[in-house]
Amino acid sequence: MASASTTSRDTRVSALLAGVIGAAWLAIHVGGIFFWRWRAATAPLAVLLIAVQAWLSTGLFIVAHDCMHGSFAPGHPRANRVVGTLCLAAYAALSFRALHPKHHAHHAAPGTDADPDFHAGAPRNPLRWFVRFFSGYYTHGQIVRITFAAIAYMALGASLLSIVAFWAIPALLALAQLFFFGTFLPHRHEDAPFADDHRARGNALSPLASVATCFHFGTYHHEHHLSPSTPWWRLPHLRSSPARAGVRTAPR
Image (cartoon, rainbow, N blue to C red; front, side):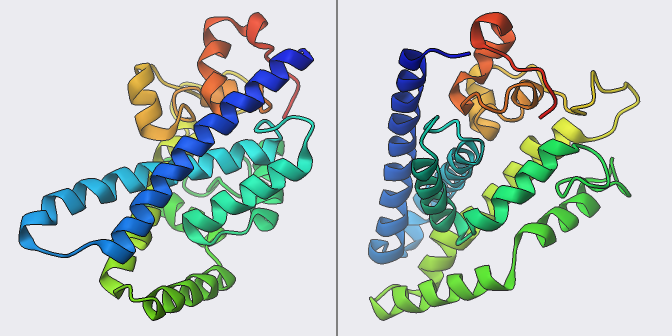
């Protein structure tokens, strides 16, 4: 079990990293939606900013994911709930309250019919699996919240083009990134069997590529299932030194 000093340190590091991700996301969000001037000469920069914003949106979801497991601020459920709610709302007007039980259902029975993130009828088909994944997380309530936010933005002078470019497109790209690297690749069926009943596997990407693809949740997905209470940035330590990192191997 982690000591009080380790837990406190982890909370500080998680808060610092979340603050950097959130501040960068907010800067592009506000700057792009309210202050961007569309010109042919600035189009390449807009594309770059949209790509960066998609990655930061993935980061917001990963921070919220840590909050679902209580690993963002261990021992402080209200802080986890508040930060997770804010991250998901900013990312794509998602509901932390609705996603929390779904994600824990995934951990309770990964890669089975009872797993809301898994497509038992198409365990090797990314397109069919993605359609099911998308339909399971996007709701009418979310669309209503996004619509009201867009109307409010336009009332403040934003253009619909900027809202789509700097919020909608990054959110959809992040969804694809989260699905492909954080769900499909780790849980897809292959000829080789899974190592255990977590039915998850990682990969051998470099640390930089691991963060770039899915904030370590693709590369170290099996480690995450072994120890859901480990924050995203500490997952590499589980592979390099499981005992030191405090791997918990009990089911979910």
